[in-house]
Image 1 (spheres, one colour):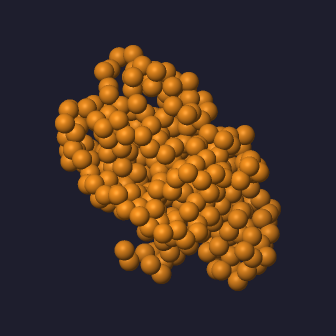
Image 2 (cartoon, helix red, strand yellow):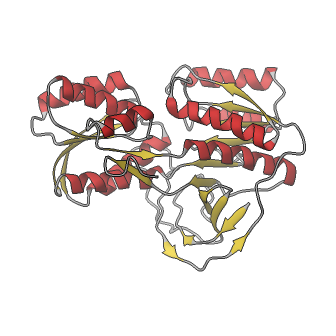
Image 3 (cartoon, one colour):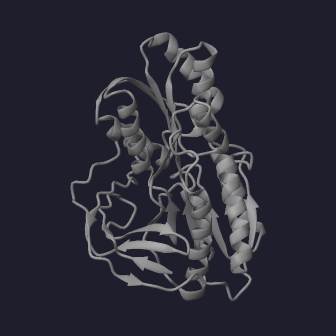
Length: 357
């Protein structure tokens, strides 16, 4: 594994270790690790959620130092459960599962899949995890948690039964995890907000479609949107939770279009909600700048056709592969990792670069 100290970061969190953060820059594993420094004591709590899990990253230059070793293959046929947040009809989680299968072949482990009926189905995911740890012999768990707090008891139960666990995409309110692997949602949201400001010429009316209030990635994206939109003279006329759903986002947008005739843009916390907003706007032939988050195929097509303005790639493939590799290293070499590992740099996709790398 390649560890590179290339940036100094400040981590503001009540759950994550305040001394360390890892940023993955590419594969083979290239991880930027900064250790042994403290965040300011007056770190702000989340305005949107009682979960004090958010990351705020401020980079400063720091001399690089490298400790290298390649990805490793397992020496035992470990069996890992991959618990995704939704059904495989969700493109992002389908990517996670596909990448997990590919990584399992590459590293010599077995993976089994646990799906969930929907991205807000909390009880169902808790029951699935509980059933899993009672009925199957597994060596590790990688989970996209539906609720950062509600899933904590059953996940910690699994860990206490000897099943090391990594949270993927969304953090979990627990200090017992091996680590959390995810995307810097605050930075992604900020990049979207700043791009919208430029497209609107520094002024205009914007509405925000958020994810569920108890999802940490939704909270971080929302805070990032607000931070980016502050770069201009933007009036945020409305904010409402679309719960990641296309239909609900379509209904909300239809109401907004009646209430705010001068609305210029809608910033959505995922591509499904951006699609719903686009459908509502096109139904009444109102031109709106609409952004999403996830870089799904349908969003990329919508951007190419001018129906959406931008989206953010979260590198789901890398998140999945990295999670499996870190779990192998933890089991075989007893390695420990910082509480959060962020993959890749921010990739803002627009019509100008949609055909690029």
